Amino acid sequence: MKKKPIYVEVDIRAPINEAWNYSQNPKLHEQWDLRFTAITYIDKKSPEEAQRFTYETKVMPGISVSGWGESKGEHHKKDGTKTSSLHFGTPQKISPIAEGKGYWKYIPNGKGLTFLTQYDYDVRYGKLGKLFDAVFRPVMGWATALSFDVLKRWLEKGENPFSQYRRFLLTMLISVLFCFVWLYHGLVPKIIVQHPTEVMMIEELLGGDYSQLNGSGVEPSGSVVANKSTTMQKLAESPKSNTSQIVNWIGLAEIIFALCWLLPRGKRLLFGVQILLFPILTLGAVLADKTIAFAPFNPVTLNVALWVLSIIGLILSKDMPSAKSCKRKRGGTA
Image 1 (cartoon, rainbow, N blue to C red):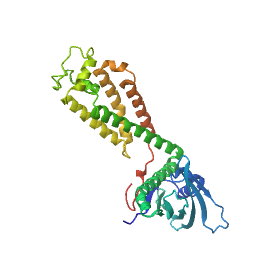
Image 2 (cartoon, rainbow, N blue to C red):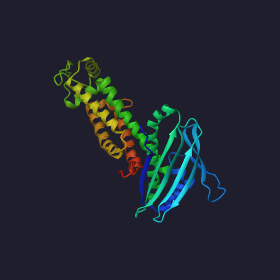
Image 3 (cartoon, rainbow, N blue to C red):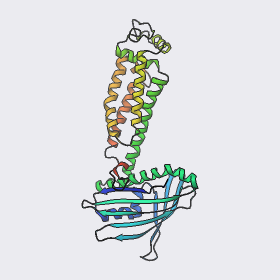
Image 4 (tube, rainbow, N blue to C red):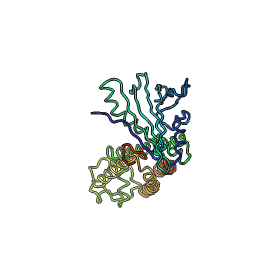
């Protein structure tokens, strides 16, 4: 199957010369482009000579990839369109990219410009490299699109790239945390193990009759609080009940909600839902079992912490950069 070149396009409400400067000046370019950590221009021997440069990309602490590049063929058309052709590569074997070519184009559109790029590259290691590129190429496309949107917001709204990427990474980190919290609490204590406390709290909220309500085989007690340990043990040993099925469905709903945190969009909606949901869950837990508020690491303190974190996430995620803001196909929509 023939590989497709990477294509990214974004409309920017800014003067075309300003966009040209922010993308051609290496010290500005390296700030917004996620693909490069450092870019260093090599002095030209003559004005007509192509601009050569070196670049470095930190993959992770202690590991980086460095390479070479050449910018040439700058064209300034009568309609104001500018084009910069690129030739790049790296001799480092750690990089799947051996050598590639592409271009940047700046097209005036009345409100500013359309900034677009298309590039392709050859990979190392034959069929194994092509197999790895099936994963690596979409990541490169995503990184390019995210970088273009960061540049767009820098030019239009003045927020520097460092601040944008910090908000982006913190929002992603909080999202992964919430995904883990909901996935764990939906899967482990409600479906895999089904802790008796989970069943007991649902029983309490539905009426507190541990036998007649669901036919679980647990005898009703005159005082649920006084016989809590005995009741929980009986619930743990009892066969599956209607209430147990309800707990399973709640666990499934929590798992689905957890997976929603992995979607690229809708983070602000999820944060907003949690801001409303955590006080309700906290109140429900306390009403089902008042003694739970006095236990170590109890739902009250946990839910308050997650509620505050949801508010922080809602603030951080406002107007967050996104690769979805860019077009990824010619003539396509963002």
